[in-house]
Length: 173
Image (cartoon, rainbow, N blue to C red; front, top):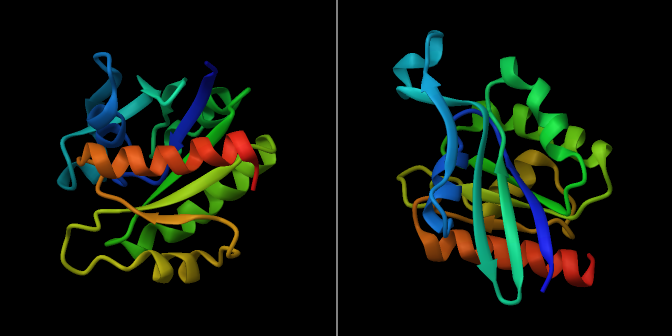
């Protein structure tokens, strides 16, 4: 049995907290606080430091560390990425305006360490969601990077993304 550090990152409102909450076997440690910026009309709370959950997957224990999405909390990104085994980039497939920030996060996290990663095209249950192939094209990702459909509030959907990442960590790209 291996213990893996998995970082769950993505732009603001991509679904990181819900992604972790939907599969965690423990009560999620969350640092959500009321939004006091211009984004308050989008949702009431945002992560300011991290979310933490745990999932046993096959024979492995995944420690899930969710990053804040707002750039003003980006000092946490590098802290959370230290010694990660892999990472998931959540991309809200209904909000192409945030794709540039997702590209920036992919660059930043791949520079921090040579860890495998997958992209989860979230909110696939909503009208107007781009297909994973369209998200791949918009983010200009090579074919070897998995871009997976996801609904962050659906435990089976989240588990499927984490199974793919765990496979990459175990067997390489």
